[in-house]
Length: 301
Image (cartoon, rainbow, N blue to C red; front, side, top):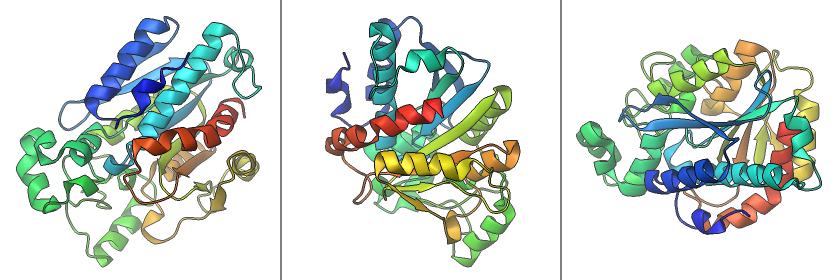
């Protein structure tokens, strides 16, 4: 049975560790690994299930304020583990049958420093506290970047140079709360952790979770894989979310665009929920219930 009590508080480091310990103790078949560490030395954890010859990647919390995506993925992970343990369906889908031929990797929190800064303030940045304080100007709760002020979802090597120029045109020329892509692509350890994971595995497709907007982004110009639209439409029908095309500073530099460019395989960005970031933990159940079927579809498509 899913332990809902773990999901009613924000996804800071302490709560993520509590959830992780519970999963490790309950499900011996769950493979828990550390794929990298953040600028402040916090672990970036990955959890895998099923056949490792081919896998689907789900990852969240690229941005500090968007920590609810981490809780969403942990809750789905626990739901999947429970379904495998009990031999039951998730929304009428027998995931155990699919996981024999295709596995799943879930990285709930790509940017643990950013999450911690957003939830607990500048002091959570450790040796970068003074830098974060100078940048945040009393608005650390609005923090999206990592501890160095680099936006992880602007730091991937896909149209990075053009995005960097657009950042400068918008007045973003150095470390910032958000949207600064760093001095070069893949400069940040958090970016490298995900990049190296993808390069070391056979990932069938990848899904990155952000908040908010109830939208699904699925394309990256002329190199968009042919089956991406069909998959995105299935996800949209299940969730009721809208298919969208990113504009301006949302084009290039992101994980979805990099994955498509690097592997010529489908990748998606899903903006969960609606409102103003950070979305509260009290919204998780509503969002999760709406997305559970779509999350299961992500594993079997």
